[in-house]
Length: 381
Length: 120
Image 1 (cartoon, rainbow over the protein chains, first blue to last red):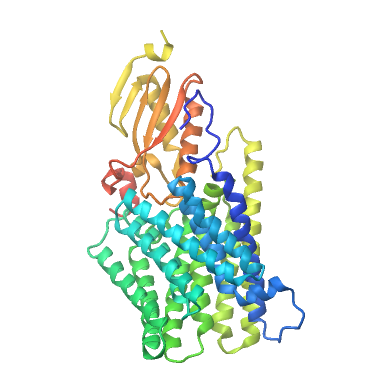
Image 2: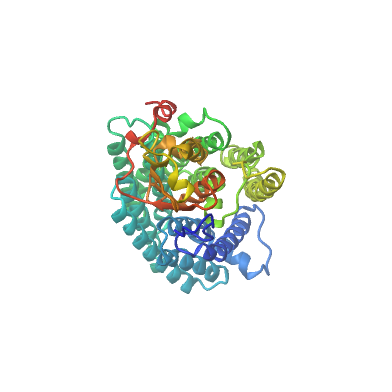
């Protein structure tokens, strides 16, 4: 660190925080295109001809853009900032490039770029394990491995990458929450229970990629793993304690606990799929939106300043997009289970919740600046 | 002789290892208590992330750790430490915040107050 008298260091430990805006912009484009494509898929009416290419790409590559192009890029950026090495940025740069290629309709090169991103990301995580050998860092590396397997399946067009891609996100969250459980007095068997859950998820994802009975059993096992992970999180996560605090900490706990509920719903959806029930939307979106996006809403007020150096002012209005997301998901996945129109309206309101969330974060950034101007110092977090 | 160097020096271990002018110790401790880990609404002092503060005639050197090597908030916390210390330390002092990983953070480093919040 620079240590001249009271001269503030301007950049991060690696001097590459300036790379973040370009990468995050690509992630944002990926999100917007994926959401528009998702809405097209959720629309109960037949799509008109002559749609723009990017919208068609958004619909056909919805999962790849959402999970890899958006969330993968964000997670890889987080990890690059954490390791503080220039080469750590290879992974988010490659997944950002992949997002751009997929949006442009060049799926072939997009798939290759995703594979490169996952290989680079695995390298970053191996570095973290060597820096801090522990179960939670090992789990982060396993999550990175799951992303790589998913990308390899996507590249080879052999079997569904979805359980592996979701596995990447779910295991990443599990690893981060496991790390936080160290702040609580851990019950005996906490880590062993999680190891069993991870085993079920990996075995389930492996089976789900295969045809025949193995595929059916894999779906059920993956679903069971999600339900068990939800139970593990409710039992051991610090959110059940921090929900009794106040301010940002309580907001984060509320998002986390709501997400853990949807995680269990999603698990039931995957188990239902294995029995041939038409619960695909519940399986995929209780997980992707109810769990993962809720995790994102929980952590964004902490992560955004870390990635962009833009500070945010917390307020009760943070709860508005969270409430809208979860209410619209209930409409879509529970009330809309047998009603395509309700499901479509729910999906539209899911997208509105994301928009409101973006507006909330932007408003919080403005509110912080206003508060700083009005006060002697930035005592607002 | 520098005014800071001429002040009475003190060495203590509570709430974190401190070596420097006795007069600055309360302000430094208060400044670091204002740096909050946002997820758990707890100061980095209570979580036990501050490994030590050494202040001599030229600089204030702070050694901190994180609970996880994968923590992306590290730069924000380091910035906050710098900001809070810059408000209480003489302008002539350089501020050097060093991130260290040895010894690894352990739950035993948490304060009694932090442990009570977390149900220990």
